[in-house]
Image: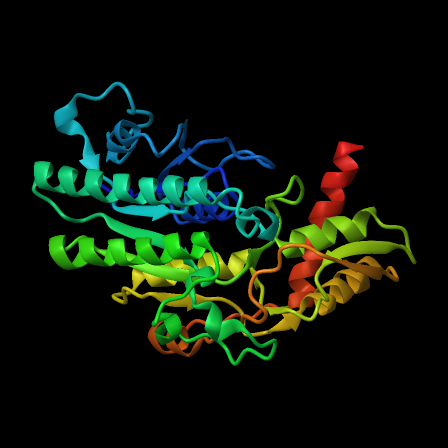
Length: 348
């Protein structure tokens, strides 16, 4: 008999980071079930089983957190007594988007309600399943965000790097950030009161292929790649604000690697997963233009901006997990730009 196959449940597996994590887990030999309100958009799912449904439905969550065996699809066909908890759960499911979605104020109630409900449903269902089976083995990863850091620590473009301890006194600049902070504390309480093993990371602007790149929910690297790809050499693109606001951006493969290390470790977090290569948004566009081989002019217009300056401080993750980012922004943008250019060609 060989070693038992490890099992993982990826919530939000139809999205950008969740789909990449499912692919990584499959490459490590896991049996993977994915769940999302939508299918994967750009490439076929790597999951052994993919269930389409809304995770704000508590009954759906109660059903999908049970695994039925080693031999395939048991979602509807296995007697209840044989359904067991997963080894690992990766919780990426959230109502989210870029600045145009998160900072407009028009989607705040949905963002807070939908995202919080998914996390409440998951933890309650897992606790009930643990109590029913008399086990407590399922390790749960929760993807928080740098948006939970207080606005007052991000007022200057020359941000020194946000340390994990900077989260308090709390003061996020968006309801999205407040929900992330609430959910971080929710996971911590279920660990403290019920012993559920959790891992929490604060993602800093993850980007790369297979991400949303049009439609209003895309993040700035994808948006700038799209604008430059559509723009003629010497042409002009629109940008919200003066472009001097600063951010750091982390390539998707490095995010997945750091998350796997966190899950394999004894460290609970919260911990930053990000790059310390802070750049202005103007520099981001210049990097995209360089990769594209184009001269691009910028028309600065009014629009939602978020905080003035944000950067990751990676001291804690270097200490606890011996992880650091390795890919430069230019190298990551090159891969992303090539992928988005191909999407545009495919549409034509």
